[in-house]
Image: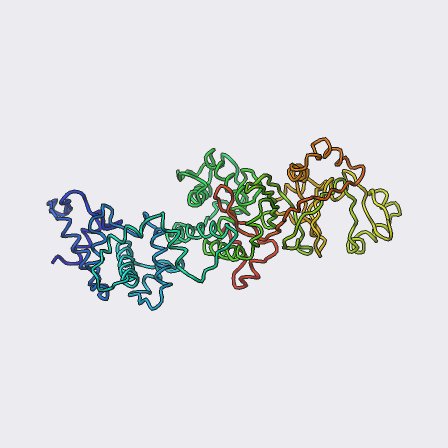
Length: 524
C-alpha cells in the first residue's frame, strides 16, 4: 500500500479535493515536478485508498463499510450530502431525524454535531464529513428498517430519501411533538435560518473595515476599498448577482444597495452611511439568533390571522402597515409609532369604524403634562390651534391641521390605541419613526380607507373626498369588522422571499434574550 503521504499528495492534485467523485476515464495523470516523470494511477486504486484510510481512522464504522460504499457505487457525483461547500437540505433532515430517533446510538456523534454547529470550527474535510453522514444514514436506516435481518439495498432506499417531493414529509415527521404553526412566516424564517447557517459554515462572512477614518458617507462613483467589501457582503446576501471585486461605486452596486435598504427598512437612497456599515457588520451569529426569536414569535400569532381573508397587519420594528384581502397584499404603507416612553401596544383587535374628518380628544395626560403650561402662558392658545374645551375635555376640531389628519380607524381596546392619518407627512422621511404617544400614524391613510370601502358601493371616491374635507366629523360603522394585528417582528420575509432585519426599537429582543448584546456592531 502506498504511504499516507503519497496518498495525500495524489488527493490534493485530483478531483478528490472537493469530494471523492469518480472520473469518467480509467486513469488520470500526475506529473512529478522534480523529474517530470509521468505516473499512471487507476482511479479505483485511489478510491480504495480513500475507503481504507477513512475506515482506519473511524474504526467504529468498519462494520458499515460495505453498505456505506454501496451508496457511492453508481454515482457520477461522489458527494451525497453537500451542495458545493455546504451541507444540503437532505443532510440537515437526516441529522434532525437521527437525533430525534429514540435509542439510536450515533457513532462519532461529537464530530457529526460539529458539522451542524455554526459556532464550531471543525477541521473535518468535506470527504470525511460526507462519509460520516453516509455512515449516519446507514445507522439510521438500519434502526428504522422493519426486518433488520433481511438483506436491504440501502443505496436503493437512498434514492427515495434524496427526493425533494418527500423532504417536507420527512421534516414534518421528525418530531411528533412539534406543533403546526399557523403563521407561515415561521417556515419562511426557518428557510432563511438554514441559509444563514450555511453561510456561517462557509467562513465567508468577514467584518467590513472602512478605509475612511473618520468615516465619510459613500455615494455613487466613490472609489474606496470599503466599496469592494460592501460589494462582497451584498453578494453573499443575495442582493448582488456577481462580485466583481471592484472598489468603484457603480450602477450595479447602486441597484444592490437600494435592494438591501428597501428590504431592511432603510431610507431608499444610494448613500452608504456609517449606520449602514454597522448594520452590515452585525455578526452572523446575532442574525441567526434574531431569526430564532422571531420564529418563536410566530407561534404566538393567532390562528385567526391565518384563517382571515381580510386583515390589517402593523409591524412596529419595520414601521409598516399591510392591508391584506383575499390572501393578497392590497396596500402597503409606512407608519410611525409610539416613542419608547409611550410605546405602541402589541395586541390584536377588530376595526369596526372609520371616522372621517375626526375630532381629536386630547388625552388628559397630554393636557396635564404639555398643554396646561401653554394655556396658562397664552389665553388664546386653544383658539389659535383650532381647539376647544368641551365638558372639561380639550378637543381639536376637524381640519387639515388636526393631529389625527382627515381619517382614523377605530378598534376598541383598553389602551385607546387607533390608526389615523397625520398632517406631519415629513416624519415619514425618517428611518427611525417613533414619534407618537402610542397611536399608529399611517402615511397612506386615505388610500387605506378607499381600499377597505371597496365592498361598500355607497362609499364611492366622490363621497370619500367630501367626507375628508375637514369640515364635519363623519363616522361609518363597518358591517364586517376587519381584524388588525399589531406585531413586533425584528425579522420578516417579504412577498418576494427576501429577508428583512429591523431595529429592536423597544428592546423586546433583548428582553427575550438578556444575555445577547443589542444587534449593533462597530465598523472597526
